[in-house]
Image (cartoon, rainbow over all chains, first blue to last red; front, side, top):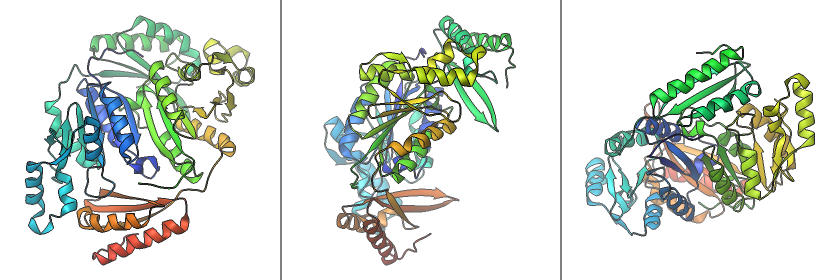
Length: 248
Length: 248
């Protein structure tokens, strides 16, 4: 399972809606793909309810383990938007109204539409740095190694684009996939030997059913493109040796 | 956020592929919807890598907090299938080969195709009870309050169908959704008052962009259908009072 990667990240999805089965989360996939490209692979993700104690506990556990944590959800104006208060509690700091965030919200909404609920979106943990929101103005923020983003995917993605240039990245994680129709049990022993010879990459075996057919994707992943190529070529050779045809 | 529910569950997704952004997890949504129907709502989910220490830590944290934990992934024959060993470690018991699981695998594959890798799929934590796999034979298992399912969605779903009759359920979680085009900031204060009057349900406010239009879904959820109806009617009345039209 090992893959060399000095920098790591985690995603904390905040919100009852994903846990109810009503909404399919789209932020983890987006963040995972982008962070892999930036050489900061996501090594863990959690989904918690809109519950302050659980958010505090989860963010403190994750931020101690990885380079960066990204949270999504819970930064709007309604009663169930409690992320800023929870993150402040996790860092042991008070919530303050950020003057620049307030200025942006007042400009965006105009004086007639600024109310207490909307100004809640200017509240951040003391010491936080704003993350721009080019879609709907209300900013995200960063405190320590934690980035707090919106839950609506289009906004979360725009916020990530805004903050990404400020991240310390590493060599991108690259991958090569070899698919075949050999059942896993027929190549498992051979694959274990390939894995043992390629300690610098991670090799995953992912069976799938598609259009009624069983297949397996063997995915080689790592930060050294040559190491990934060498391992993928051995995987391909293994598939041919076992009488399979690598599928593109 | 409160919702009365005596029984709760958690989902632990095991596998590097979801964290790489390559694969969109489909098991959380399925399990969350089914478990809500069974009155055992999912209150937390985690995604961890194929790493024994992290699986042990996560499963032990979750099983102490909820009625049932469901894990998905990592029970196949390849080197990256380490779930059974990790769950055994979490429970402090050895891994043993289950005779009934072995019998099923030998029958399914036939003597010529049973090898060490396939027989790994008969290994379970000591004391575990098998969960039937009507799709591809290799069983899942239950130990304590933890159910271990396959990662391939079609198999995870079939396993869940097989085990569901044995779960202790509660009154189903029901929900009513009122959608409108009023911006959240315009109803946040009124909604907070509705929430305060309906402590037995949870009310969530979920903004969305769809076909270029902004909308909000207000979702009332709870185990008492009358309480859900009463709260949803107040939400609908609030939308009309603020000049909005509840959308179906």
